[in-house]
Length: 175
Length: 263
Image 1 (spheres, chains in turn cyan, green):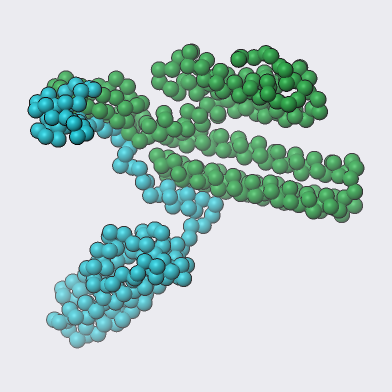
Image 2 (cartoon, rainbow over the protein chains, first blue to last red):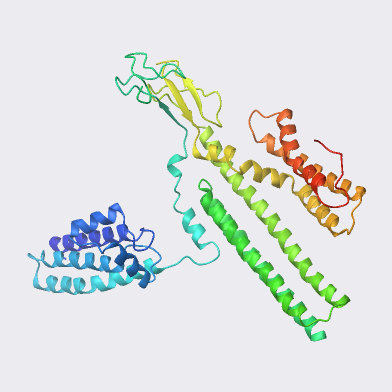
């Protein structure tokens, strides 16, 4: 494998991972997120209209994730870009890469479908999936703040006093 | 007739076995959730609800199946005996479920307390100049004037601390501490309601069970609140047990004119 070949394969793997990382966590199924919108924009894929995307996810029985159709379109774009960047490869390498590119959209879309349609099993499947999100971890600490004057930036120097000791401006409200 | 009896006994046996299966799945499942996350109350709460939903579904099946069995019986002692077998199983399931829920809620509270201790180990710093601050209280928000830069700091406890002291943790731990008294109270309630015409002595026995439970509960509950003393225990106890006295005064049985107990 030449350096160029390795670079192309690495770039392909990275882009596929970015697509899946942005698409899969989306809830409810068929929804979108800022990260997913950014992926669609970067790859030039037009998002499905809102009604159509939820209907598509329901039709595919997705439990989460962006619509499979959108993910497939993104994969096609990534593969098309990789095909256009094969210059400099030896003929044998180009053939091997082409074989890989031909498999990627269907194979990855199939893996995505499996992951997006998987539903937690057992009595606590949903509760455990919920627990693993650790939603409030960033609040697990003692914190402090000082009220500052919006006019001069001076700190509040007396509890219960909401007039700035430095410039006389109100510390809170419109005054 | 024997066929109906056998059918009912076999059905109750299956319900009992299914209940054991549910609890066998629930025990390690909840342990895993509690070990994974207690800062967010939703997973534990959702899991406890899932157990309740399964068990209530079983109890409903007992009622539904009894209706079908009952339609094939002609009344009499055998009917009452069979019905009582179903009721007893349903009651036993209910009690075991409640005890399980109490223990698991307390276990989650203890896991949360570990996180509370971590938060309380952190030294808050002035967000103006960064020097260490000494908060007057640790379990709730407070304001501290920095001795170095004079800025007034509002100190916020961490999520675990707020969840523990302002959430259901003290209740869960107090309920577990008073579990023996709670069981006795439940038995006393059942015994009282099983009497066709209860007398003053029966009501006194019920009162004693309520008093014992709420006394133990409130002692444990108040110990978990920093700064609470005997006065708070008494206030809490009076409020909690008050519902029993209210019921005793306003219930529609032969003791409607009971005049004892706190106002």
